[in-house]
Amino acid sequence: MSEKTIGITLLVSHIALGMVGFVFPIVIAIWLGCVIGFCVLYSIRDRNQAGLLHIGAAYLCSYEVVARFFVKGSHLPWEVGKYLGIPLLLMGLAFGRKLTTLVPGLILLALITPSLMRSDFSRDIRDTLVFNWSGVFVLALSVMYFHRRVIMEKNIVWVLGAIAAPAVTLAVCSTIKAPDIDSIEFGLEANRAASGFGANQVATVYGVVIVALSVAFFMGKPLFGFATVDFFAMVVLFFRGLISFSRGGLISAVIAVAGALAVILWAYSRHQNMGQTTRIRRLLLVPIIVPVFGLIFVLSDQLTGGMLMLRYQGETGGTLSGDREKTIAVVTSGRTDIVWSDLLMWRDYPILGIGPGESARMRPHYGYRNVAPHTEFSRLVAEHGLLGFVFCCAIIIMPIMIVMNPAYPVVGRALLAAFGLFSLTVMTHSATRLFCSTFVFGVGWAIIVPKDVLLRLAVNHPVLRKRILKRLGLASPEPILPHPADDHSAEVA
Image 1 (tube, rainbow, N blue to C red):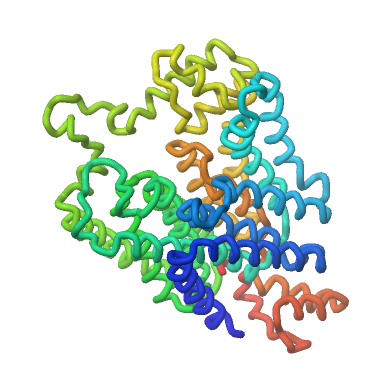
Image 2: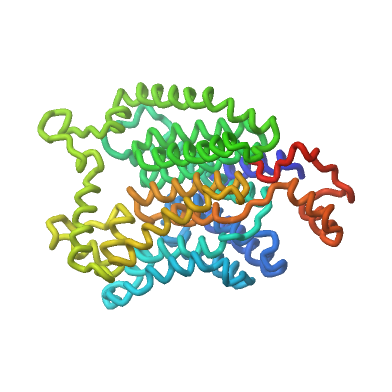
């Protein structure tokens, strides 16, 4: 099948999955079992040469929230993303990686392990490990898996498609559950009725898919067959995210896409082989596309009676009536108070922190109610101490070093900027509650090889020609190479 046929099939099948799954939720579990089972069995056969293990893990990014949408009917566990994603990544590592490629991930893992000695496992091991520690563990594991892993651009498109497809199912289910937008009463808080489920989680998934669709647009590789279909899907998800009244996911998406665009333009300004002219022309569409999304925001604001703009301005019922002062704590829904209490814990437990899972229990002793951390950076220093602070610095500095390195292909650097920024900004407001926010952090660490680089390799190394051409799906024994003057070895493709 052609790439267009595969993309359309991917879209239609997940629309159908949403319709059928809404009536028979058990189908959601059966479908996931079939997808993950196929990825595992095929990867055992080819030792993960096709990369189905990381494609299966990418599929869990959005599907995790689909499973939570039907958590009762599907009988899938709440943390299904981590329960399945971690074994997939570990299995991929078991098929063999050079020790030098694991170093950054091992450093991150070493920084978050000692504080486990401070945790009270007698109370609730599941709460300590799964809800509080496994998020940063997935991040370190993802870095270990992807760092310097050579992935062809065709395979990375499959990763982006796997991230995006389940969000279509989620949007279908949300629309079926709340088909009449006019009947929804919009206030100044996250709207569960409009999202059909937890608004923060749904908006975060829509956000990561908007990033995936945007990166595919810059690459010139539509995920759903045609660029117009991708654009329509992006518009729908953006609208559904807006009316959820959850701000974090979409704001993170906007920052991430802007970061990827900045890397591309920076590389272009430094004449770093941006790729084919037809793909560069896509950048010229950005000034046209941005106002379209601005118009969608304005129309959505009118649809919600002006509440959407007030929500993004941080207003509440109390601030509008004058009974409550509009402070940074009010605008961030109390997150700054949580951060402050975390910092006080770090002051009292500076080296190893208080241990994973302990900050919520200790919070009342620091003048705030018993509530789980919402900002991962403050949670890291509170629960992991000085090592947690080093971890925070590492996950910010190390990606910057790769993004600024011209030796890496531009497409990989743009992808790392997009997913890195998305992951880090989501962690400021939703910690690591979702598998997607930590898994995608590692994806951009791979070395994404454009097709023309492999074609040159096929000519320069005849022994590898047959294998490379087979992997690319080309039959010609003598591929036609670009003119030397049009060297696109680092193209955004």
